[in-house]
Image (cartoon, rainbow, N blue to C red; front, side, top):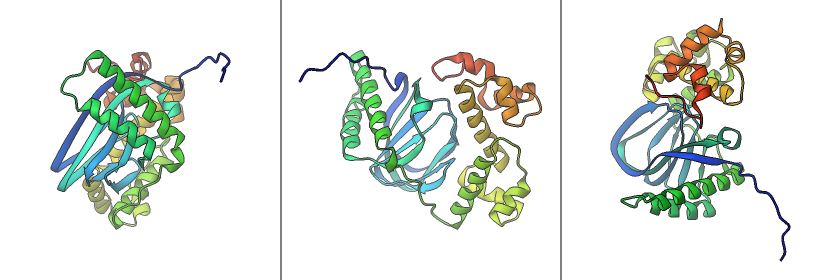
Length: 271
């Protein structure tokens, strides 16, 4: 078969792999973190409870979870153990190409994950091995994109988990404005104390801090789409660009302008 010359433009390009490891967690609780990288977790064995901006769900072996930059996420394996392969990375075109979510790995994805696991498990990584990890990860992300219809919204575990998910959903629907605790009380059908207790149970922080983390994550996504600092500040109902800049720096460690100049999706380090 003869092919005509075709110019190939990469849909995505991974510029840096920041972490790549396989670890077993036993009776372990991690309340949560945010960071400027994409993070892919593949659950090899065992089960745990994962908390994300999308809610609370239980993982199973063979599940893939993709976290977008600055998405607050945590895990709870206090009643057993779970083995996870985790890779965090940054690059070009990722925000336009990828969607955070969870899914059961398909057959093609499992083959790529098996090869990726073998490379990550090597005790030392030569430059060629690191290049292979990058290539396998890019291939995996493209395959995940092609099978995007298989991404499912996880079912919450309990009534409190359902309430937590509904409150987080309300926050996401109203991400461009400030909300009051009373609004969450109405969504939950509970008093302020119960609302705070639910957030501390599933997120390890107050509703106010959780909403601030979500708003910072959303602000990052707008900046990465090319919006100016001024436009983002007014889009998100801040009283002024200066007030927005103070909020952003408090949450991320850098100003919005420094973030836009950081390159490769990474802000400059905290000074």
